[in-house]
Each structure stands twice: as structure tokens, then as C-alpha cells.
Image (spheres, one colour):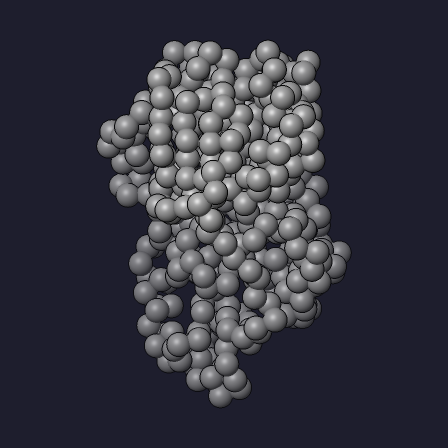
Length: 431
């Protein structure tokens, strides 16, 4: 960057504190004020970045302090910061939360980049005790610098007075509780941005809470240029393309594709085309590979099963067919939805999955590709789903797997000829 943009990190003591809503509001408020603002989301999140994009008007990339090397993080930040004045980085979970025995927390990334942290504090159930909480977060790690506190969900003027009195120097802003700014959620997080026609009004309302020139100017003063680690100068995608031409499923059922992966494939020379299974569109038959990302196929299983053109095109495709998480489920023989109805799907892999009895599977994964997998190098990935495996037939395993701490897990995924997939969302090749 010729003139490095400034950046700050939005964090919280815990998930659900309101950091996403604050981030959206600030992105739109800065954009409306003429600041060229961009966003980054920390961690393996496919939902919040689409809200960031609606607020900022720019692609939101993920950074992952566990999966990515400092070199990879630096390369993404240089790309995101191009032609931006301010970069707002939304943290993941609580400030210090991360994988067991490994780096990857919001604090780790903030320390790596030397960036100030703005702590979002949900004040609904406390007053003066907030001071002890802030003191603990401020002193817990000497390499993490709290630049200030945003008091969120404050109930009244009296409540605000008590909080400000207890925190006389740290408060940057005080935001009242607003029930109108509640966004519906489902099992994997917020309902997707593109699914609600009220999205634009929601973003405007979020911006209204923070559209104060004094607040915005103060945050610009607090933001600093990130200390970007020096890169090797070698430009290569974080994940090798599946082919030279890749047909990618993209709609409400298949929306969990990382922008850094797709952009890396483009830069590596791959031609990307997109199709909607929900609109009964088949993949491009001339593509070398088909990619079915994760998403919410369990919410649309009936429509997917009835979409004859897309299923026929998928079954007839002569190239590599790769699915992850929701895409992996669709490659199977049947998917049972939450109501207990089983839908016959692609039948290209010998597995049956169910959402009728939910069980959470969550965590980072270290993957070692086995024979004829799409990649040969070790991978970093994340697993997050509630579906259960009902049945699995004869097929080759796709990955040997370990968790973030290195403990061995059962093999993940299946491969049968040109068709393969697993529950893992692949983030990048191992640093």
C-alpha cells in the first residue's frame, strides 16, 4: 500500500454482544460520510461477511489466525486495503477465544497486526461491574491494546450515568437497546443477508445509531496503520483451483464459498461460472470441475430434489465434482429434513444424511488429502453443521483428519471416481 489505510478491530467479551450490528452501522456511517471503508471478518464465518458487503459496498474477506500464516494474512489485507481509507475488522467469539492449544483468537490477530481493539460490551445485566470486566480484558494480555469501550444495549439515562461514572476514561460511545434492530437467526447463525428484503433498511437503522461526526472522527483518530508482516513476494492462491474452468453453485442453498478462495482461483487463471440449483440450472457441461459449496440445502431439499435439469446435468458431468458440507450432503442418496421427510438427491456418493435429529459438529480440522483428492498438500479447514450421517456405503475416504490441537479424528469425506466431498469447509493450504 502506497499510503497504508488505517484499521481497528471490533471485539467483545463473548459472542452475542452486538459487535456485528456495531460493525454494520460503522461501515455504512463511514461510507455515507465519504470515507472509503472496507471490512474483514475474522474466523470461519460465511454469514456475517455478506452483511458487511451490504453495508460497505465492497467484498468482505475472511482472515483466520489459526489457518493462515502471517504471510497469507498480509497478502489478503494488502488486497482488501487497496483504495480504502479505513479497514474495520470484526472479531470472532470473545476477544481471547480460540482453538485449544493454538493461536487464532481475535487478540492474536490484533497483536500480530499491532491494531487497537474497540471492546463492545453488552450492558443489559450490569452497571458498575462493567468496570471490573473492562479492567480484566485490558490487563489480561500486554500485547493487546484496548483503545476504548462501546457500551451497548444500555437501558436508560440512569444506567448510562452509572456506567460512565464507573468507566470515566474508556467509554467511546453509549448505545441504547433497540428491539427494532433484532435480526432473525437460525441454526448456523443469522438468517442470510440476501434472504430478507428489509436488509437495506436494517443497515440504515444500524448506521443511524452511530452516525455522529464526533464519534466517527474519534474512531478515525484511534485507528492505526496495521503492521503488515513482510510477504515472500510469491503470489499463489491460498487454495489450488479445482480446474481451469469451474462451475460453482450459488444461491440461497449454496452460499458458503470463501471470497479469498474464489478470488485466488481467478488470479490463478481459472474461469469461474455460476449456476443456481434452486432455479433448476445445470452446471456448465464444458467446465473442468463443479464446486458445490456449503449453505442451507436442508431448508430447500424438496425444491432441489424436484429440480430435474440441475440434477441431470450434475449426474452427467464428465469432470471433477466436489462438494463440501451442504454440497457434500446433496451429493448423497438422500437428505432427511427437519420434519422427517427424506428427499432423494444426486445419488453420486453412497451416503444418507439427516437433519431430523440435530447434533452439533464444530471445530477446526487439519486435513491430509488421500489418493486422487483435489489437492495434494495438507489443508486447513473448519467443520460446522448439525446434520447427522445416517448411512455410508463403500467408497474411498477423502481426507485423513486431525483437530486443531493435532488429535487424530476419523477420516473425513468420500470419493467415488470423479465425485468427492466432505463436511469440511476448506480455508487454505497449510502454511
